Image (tube, rainbow, N blue to C red; front, side, top):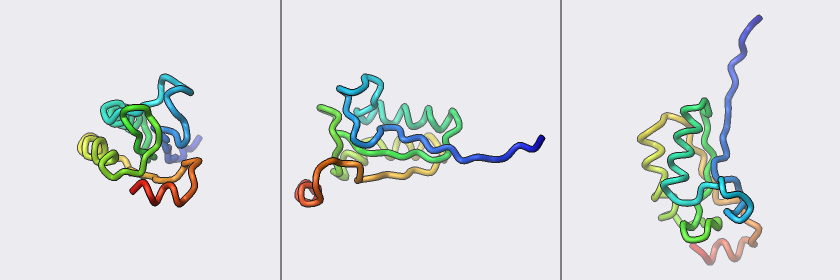
Length: 99
């Protein structure tokens, strides 16, 4: 029996999900980074991440929100980090005006 290699991607934060949908959803920088590192340690080779507002867990494209957790993940794992500013239910004009 041959063993095939696989690539596991973990979408740590989900896309449009909010903490009201699941109390397991990470949305603070500490929770996002620790869960991302745990996913890599469990075998994920790609970490797909959205930034969250630490106050309420809503999606944000603010670069500062990403810099609050990305360096910690990069230092702790060699997994591929795939960040996203998509997955929002808001329209493009709203996204552009936020930045």
